Image (cartoon, rainbow, N blue to C red; front, side):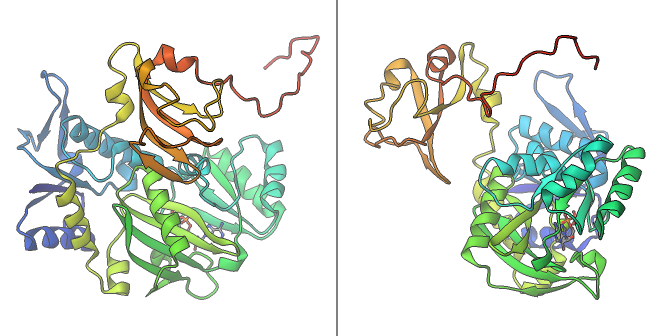
Length: 395
Ligand SMILES: Nc1ncnc2c1ncn2[C@@H]1O[C@H](COP(=O)(O)OP(=O)(O)O)[C@@H](O)[C@H]1O
Ligand SMILES: [Mg+2]
């Protein structure tokens, strides 16, 4: 295959290793500077220029987008996606993972355990938020920090309030997070490629530092990953839409707490610690996938008027519990079931004899009008009726 590594650091360890692994396997590989692309939307078809000249055909890209160029970098990746060039990490995945709040919001609906976290803006809401996540000591995080920069441990509520107020006054958004003391100075980095963890290590902070980042002097050791941690890592990467990811987990009392999912994980620490060929695993995975470029389902399937994708609850407006999928009469109504979600498992292309259970969810494609009648009325979280104030409140 012909593959481009998008990177601004051709000499960096990770870039060099990926390039070498591709060459060793007989692939044609180029390292291209992400910032030298020009996105061309003038022609009939999406196109890209590189260093002023039209880009030749590639089978795949491997984006290594640094934090400082997220916007432009993801725009370039998105353009490759529009051109049907395979990328293990989509533009959407990269931008969602980069923002710690957005990542937490997305992961939180999929039963992924995370440290209790709050996000507030008004001064009056800071103290209650700190109390809600468990009080001091408390961790404060900049939304887009990396390498441990912008992660602070505040010993007291007053100190935490002062730090948050200062950051807010300089227009910085911060997360308030419970300090997971049982994992102090330690965390797990799992490298996910496709649907498996190819390498894992424990990072330990230096001295009395609580951050275990290698850039903060942390040391690394290879570990045999517990299957529970492995599942949490793989699912987190899948949910974020990343096929190559470094998933960071704290070791909580009750198991893994996912902290973040990195879309451009460094390879030096993990390859040194584990002596495994992670770069090779990444290249092999991409080579096996080039025939199937990732497709943005909603973007593609909603172009035909009146048709779209929707999630139907089995226990919804129309009750299908106990019926088989065939008896549910979906196909007759021009609805195709793409996947069946049951708890944390997913059954792709479910057969008609599958018996439906109460909490099943069906991810379907079909006529929106037909599906609308099957979606229950929005469930209210609290069905309390509140009286309107007599006087309209000013905003
Ligand atoms: N809630 C927490 N409890 C305990 N330690 C934490 C917590 N959050 C972060 N840390 C420590 O700080 C490090 C950096 O935090 P992280 O959120 O991964 O930021 P960065 O993106 O800068 O790496 C982690 O690797 C971990 O060692
Ligand atoms: Mg981290």
